[in-house]
Image 1 (cartoon, rainbow, N blue to C red):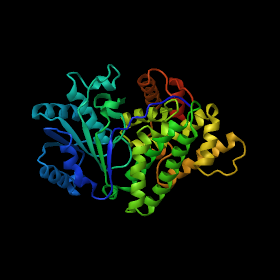
Image 2 (cartoon, rainbow, N blue to C red):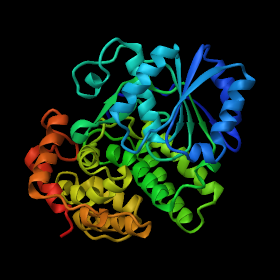
Image 3 (cartoon, rainbow, N blue to C red):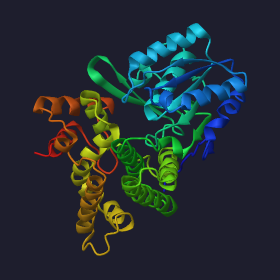
Image 4 (cartoon, rainbow, N blue to C red):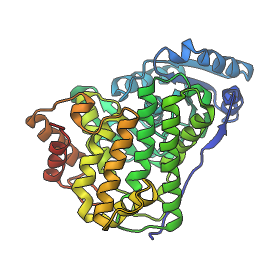
Amino acid sequence: MFNFSYYTPTQVVFGRDAEAHTGALVKAQGCKKVLIHYGGGSVVRSGLLGRIKASLDKEGVTYIELGGVVPNPRLSLVYQGIELCKKEGVDFILAVGGGSVIDSSKAIAYGLAEDADVWELYDRARQAKACLPVGVVLTIAAAGSEMSNSSVITKDEGGVKRGYNNDICRPRFAIMNPELTATLPPYQTASGCVDILMHTMERYFTPNGTMDLTDSLAEGLMRTVMSSAKILRDDPKNYNARAEVMWASSLSHNGLTGCGTDGGDFATHGLEHEMGGMFDVAHGAGLAAIWGSWARYVLESCTPRFARFARKVMGIADGGTEREAALQGIAAMEEFFRSIEMPTNMKELGIAPSEEELRTMAHMCSAAAGGKKGSAKVLEERDMLEIYRMALGE
């Protein structure tokens, strides 16, 4: 195992009606004015935004609003939020939504704290030295951004999608009421479950530095998400399954399932970011579409881990050799994706990139990673291109 630092400063308030605590939690931060940041009209139609405002009003907290966040959140709205907050004297950002809203909120918080272009952080031109405080009322279990140090933003020009990680953006608190996720469309719920799984799988598939305790936590989380995803497929209102998935979302990406490893692989995320930037696909669905091709491409470099995954997570009881078990495990995961109506290749995802577009994505993925990406197998641009080709599904 490797040495590690595990940092999770986010206060979690979990359960039914948890959003009623919003005002008190924000007031405890000692802020003067809050930006309520959200996406579309669902938080308005559901009455959630109204309940949050009432909670803030009760505590005497002043606020303004900015909606309009979309999946694969845009830099243009981040810039708009920064200017609005400067004008209004905002000193706390309250994200009401899922990963896209939280990521956009973190980017605004970065941009307000320093007098420089926030995109420079995502473009790897500099490191952040400060970030305004962020709080979260979570409505979608998926990205884990409510407890993570990460944020992903898409630059409007060219669809360039980039992530930035820094502990200073970790939210001060995360309010999690599983009931708030009960009205999500089945596709969005399933896509979120894949994203949760992948955050742990990215850390799990590494040949370097493992701990049996960390492995067991990761394997238990993956099994729980898969079983809960199937329950929600058939019973979307099931509170207990919603709660399991929501808590797994946070634990999968707050660092817990990577303690003792080399930091994980995250090549699948890098590959998907370019697909999401170019084609604006749902993140979890894009991950499902690329994962099987990535797994088969890197298998020979990480066979024991894939074999353990097959037996401990996918329940492959007698898979023969380690390689045979590993291949069965990959196929079983793809079958799980199909069982919750997630794609296993680009054709099923609904995109058909040309060879030129594949080459562009591979080049951009390599450039974003500084040339190479991965732990299960270190990938260069030519490897990324081959994985994209394998994932076409033709």
